[in-house]
Image (spheres, rainbow, N blue to C red):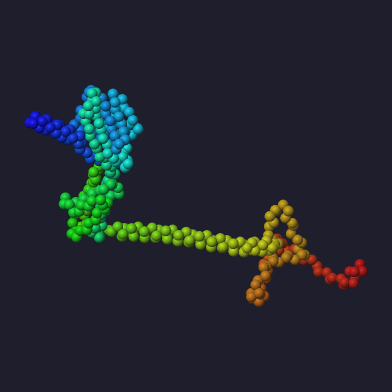
Length: 339
């Protein structure tokens, strides 16, 4: 009876150890979106006795290395020389359970492991913004899966928020301070540091924007005003030219209609064709005068001066006086017609 109990106890111990060996712990692995990942077999050393390595995603075989020949990689997976599974360009649908089985040449399973793969997007670099007028500060990120934001002021944590993309903080004392904002998740960690000094009152951002906007509007207004003034000047100049055109034409026509006065003593332009002076019996023609305006005619008749001697008379007076012809009486009109 004692022998039977010992045999039963031995079988129970063997069964318990066998069941314990079958239970495999699942290892959690994080992967970054868009990057490559190696699922390593920690503690395993590749040797010449290893003959078969098999990787599965869920219940689907994704890669297999048997007798040194790589099979069923589907272009996305690859098995390295040390038995690692390399996954290229991770995507969100790559999150799953991965299992590896390694056998030696005798068909014995020397390693069996399970991995739980989860994918996250890396966090972006935090951006710190502040306003001295409002005494407020903001730290914000634009990308990242399940981020944690931590705000530090002078190396003292002020806030820590999980699954938030923005953190805000207000201060009361006007002093110089060093602010750092850290964003992290399971696959990345980024940090930004700024030194804020609001002790000296400077121009506010709204005041700067207002000054720039006002200057721009003023420049545009002055440009339009100058353009308008130049346009009006051109229009006035063109209008004056149009009005002066007919006047100049009328003046030219009047000047052409007038005949120049010819004086008896004036020298002709061509001396070769100059005529001899008339005989002394003929009277010298008086120079022509432009008729005065009506208002001055009376004064002209009252103060009429004798005509100036002509050039012919001046020429005849030189030397001894010429004899005057005898005046003959004119015959009557009837005798002239009968002859």
